[in-house]
Length: 345
Image (cartoon, rainbow, N blue to C red; front, side):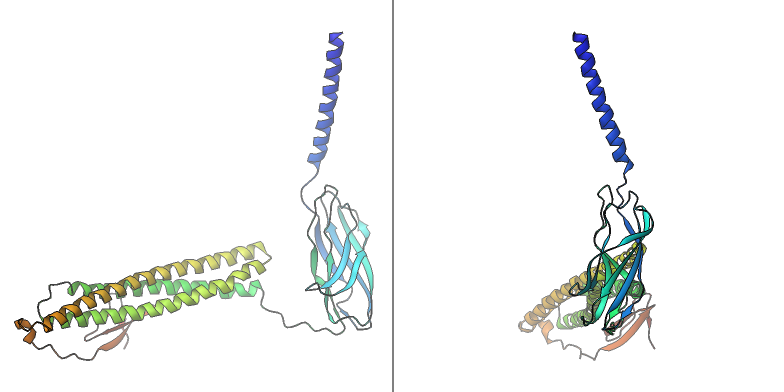
């Protein structure tokens, strides 16, 4: 009796296992790929205000086969107007896995002039995979004499300008780094000279003049780099939306790469700006220290050194130094270009 019961239980378990395995095999046979609209067109792209008949055809593929009959509507771009709503289409060739569908709609007269597009409601297959609403960009009709505005540049047109901007920004960033290094080196030299013990007015005035020259050079270079940095940051914001407008994955990748290059250039520019800001602040602090020391010497009549007359201050000269695409203004009594730069004649 026990053996009979065990055999019955084993038979039931085996039956369930076979049923589950069979269903799993059927489930595995289905693909997760949703249906795809391969092409879509209309018989005419213009209709008069008196209306008329539109015929549209579409080729749809589906790995598992369509479950539902496609439904078409015709909206304007903003989906605020339509000339056809819930139009069923019929299979005219092929099958549910790869077929050509056709639909007809009679457009009424005296509707709002606009461009209307063929749109498909979500397409479903037998395994419940579905698409989003599909817009047929090439299947449209301009109704009642509608004239579309001039087309704006698409992402492909923008790619060249973005890549050019990224290359220009990279060159500017490298030039800015050179400028920052040169201006920092010159300012550091002036600051180092000013660290000697201050003993008389002549020495103080000479050191202050050196610091003034370093300060002017650093401040001028800082202004140039800051303007370049603001320009490139604005370009990043301007170009960022172009990536979202690109439909082609390869184009998206190139756009992202160009904007990434532009972003890296901004980081270099920002580093150069920070270096110069620190240098300008250090020079200013040293100038304040020397000016205070000078005031103390002047206010101390017992110090014989105060009677020494300072040299008359001559006017600064300005030269323009060039290195490749970068340029640097050097200001001073006897200005010289940094290493690697040549004076512009």
